[in-house]
Every structure is written in C-alpha cells, then in structure tokens.
Image (cartoon, rainbow, N blue to C red):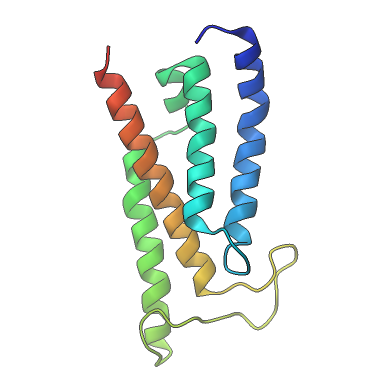
Length: 137
C-alpha cells in the first residue's frame, strides 16, 4: 500500500500496539489476557507495518528468522513447567516469588509460561504470514 497516511499511522501504531501487547501479557495471569492474546496483538503490529512498508522492512525488525522465536518460547514454557519439579512439586505447579516486583506485581512460573506462549504465537504467526507473502509474487 502506498498511502502516506497509512504509513504515518503505522509508524505511530507499531510502538503503541507492542506496548499494549506487553500490557495484556503482564495482566494475563490476573485477568483476561495473557501470552496468546498479547502475542496476537504484537503480530498484528508487525503485520500492519508489513502492509504499510513491505516484507523486507517488516523483517528488518528481527535480526534473525522469526521461526527461531518458536523454540525459544517452547523452551521458556517447558522450563516454567519443569522448575516446580526441582522443588518437589508436580509438573506445571505454580511457584511464586515472595516479594512482588514494582509495576508487574507477583512474579511466578505462570508469567514465564505466558512469556513462552507469547513468543511462540509471535513466531508462528509471523513465520506463516511472511512465508506466504514471499511466495505470492
């Protein structure tokens, strides 16, 4: 799309949507939201930039292939599930730090699981969309 208005809007919306996706990610284990919804919002931000500026510009945000986000996210999620087993608890049991962190609140394994899901969703969504769009020319 060659619209100047759309390009300017995309420049302003990208950081706002990414910030909102992190907000949704962080509030996910307290209220509705979480890694899946936050990951979709982050993917939408990059897709919006892709529509405005093209595939190469959207890919330039990542120093590596978006497909590498998938195993990173899977590793974080798996680690958050295995970590309680070292404390003698069942797999995927919630563990929480005793002191809350400023702005974020209570931090525990559910947050790390959500971060892993967030990375998986961003990686899968952008890999699929970028792959489809590079093959359609």
